[in-house]
Image (cartoon, rainbow, N blue to C red; front, side):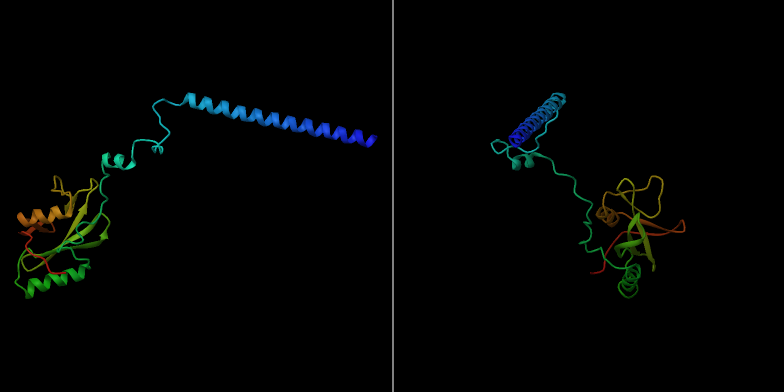
Length: 194
């Protein structure tokens, strides 16, 4: 008989513990729901949480994409495929321009653009033949993302692209300086084959 009472007490204790745990779980669930409701009530009516239309929506992602403006293009090297750009070293560029200037038709304005590794702010160099001499002119990328030639100058001419530099100086004279002294001027005339 004593064993039965002990088992009954144990069963009663287990049932009571289970009921308490269920009650506690229900209280926690109710508290979580109440907190969620409070958070929703605090949310600004201007803020929307959904970013994609649901499957029953009449709005299509494709039509939304078509109406949004495109992001600006990345700063890609659009000049790499141009005939005047050569992916060569300074020494190779000097040799190529000198060869044309010395043994070719000695044409002032014969030029190419090449990558430059000496200065992070001057990603390119304009290599140019003028008056029996080769000039290496840095092409700087300014902090406003515009390009300019040579060293920094007050009220300097700047360009939105490398192509714009070439186009401009094919039409207008590029004045050349060495050590601050004007040594010549020329238009960009021709470029070696790649």
